[in-house]
Length: 126
Image (tube, rainbow, N blue to C red; front, side, top):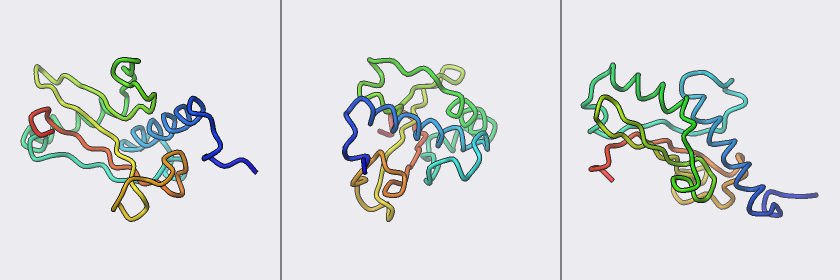
């Protein structure tokens, strides 16, 4: 039996990217809950201070984001992106934790062992 630990790095990156994409799409209900990896969607105080309309628009843009490049996504995991909202730069980041959200995931490509946290933040809050 092949496990995710046995995957070559390229196949593993493709698998993690697909899971991260499914999770991002799920924040607006674009992916059935049963198909999306488990996790949390959070934002920093700086993003919250932009107001509800900006938060909704940023959430829409994160869910639809497809601007990953080799420069911005060197691992190929689709874990970070940059959005410009009317001149305000906002980042999003997907971090991969263990099922208790205490440590990094022991096997990021295995959704049974991984929980995602997608964070919207301002660059000054990094």
